[in-house]
Length: 280
Image (cartoon, rainbow, N blue to C red; front, top):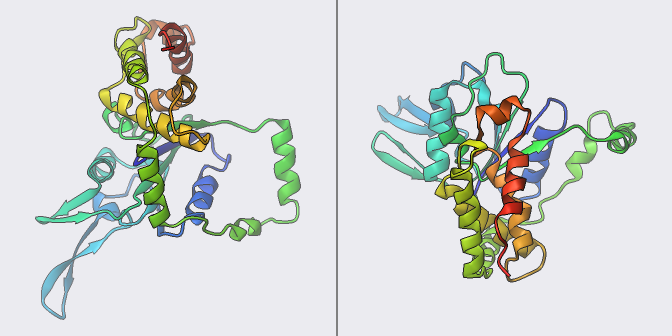
């Protein structure tokens, strides 16, 4: 549906592995960029290189010129590098020295960050967080999950089984799927319901900052995709509620009072979904 994803979780819970395996399931190009405090914008976008053969400068494309891009620890790089990345994410093109380079379809960025270890990091501003359609928070597995991980890799120290993952879809099929998702029907009443939910975030005493119109569009797109995944040609209120938390949780800010009381944005979003009347 044209959005990008921010994976947030503690170290060691397979954020990077998840992104790698997803990339392997698509028959397209993949690149990984490890963000560090020393990373410069040109390390991501590319730069001009002088060619002695023709005595001229040529643009050498950076790792952002790919189809599926994993940005590891996006909050490790300084603000100017983050801003360069976000410009490409938003426009799906890059202008360098007067020349515009368009990104090929699919163009999908998966960024990861650690929410706890903040020393030496540069938090993403709200305007940049808004560029991601989802923020998915990954937690530690439960006891049964830990046991399953140990049994699965007890004889596979180097995770060789991950290499068994083969592509199951190509860019042409993805483009066709995107077109089908766009055709999923959503009633005008449900569009109004989405607008009411987002509007409530802007007029809510529990929140310091509400969600933007981009959030409304993201909920609409994501709910259509959810309906298609569930095998339907039309959106229901359950589809909207299923995606609302992941779409909104990084776009709103708690009021100081609610934050001090220990509330979470997920709780406030759930309250809003309960309060706003669902169309019949």
